[in-house]
Image 1 (cartoon, rainbow, N blue to C red):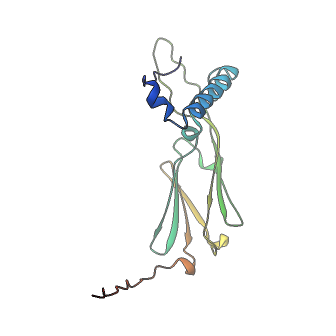
Image 2 (image 1 turned 45 degrees about the vertical axis):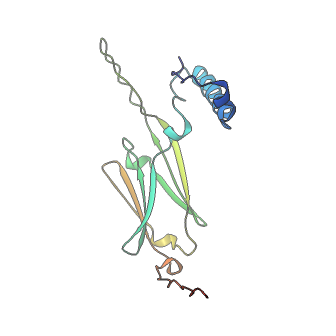
Image 3 (image 1 turned 120 degrees about the vertical axis):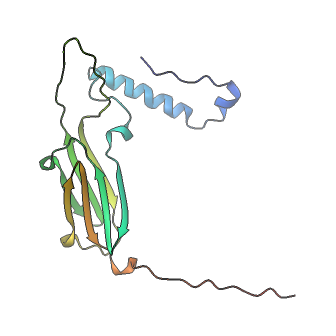
Length: 159
C-alpha cells in the first residue's frame, strides 16, 4: 500500500515541476517491488546508498562512508584516474520470529558509491580503516589544494 500523500489544490500541483517524475519513479519502484516479492527494491535509490562525507583535516583528505552491518571483507575500494569507488554488499540475515512483529527499514543488497578526487591525489598513499560500521579513507591533500590566504582589495569611493 502506498504511503499517504498530502492533498494539494490543483493550483499548487501545477507549480510542482518534478511531481510527474516523482509519480513515475514511485510507479517503477512499485512494479519492481511486486516483481521481486516486495523485498529487494524497498525504498528509494538514495535509501539504498551508503551515506558519504568528505573533508580536509590536518593535511589529509578524509572520506567517511557509513556502512553499518557490512563486513569489512565485503568492501572493495578502488581508484581509477581521479575517481574513488567504494563497492560492497549488506547481506540480509533472515530473522523471522513467530508471534512477534518486527519492522525492517534497512536496505540490503549491493551498493556502489563513487567520488571524484582532486587532481594530484597519489593513489599509492591512500589508506583505509574500518571501525564500528564506518569506513574511513584518508589520503594526503595535493599541493594545489593547500590553503592560501587571499587579501581583500577595497577601492576608495571617488566623490
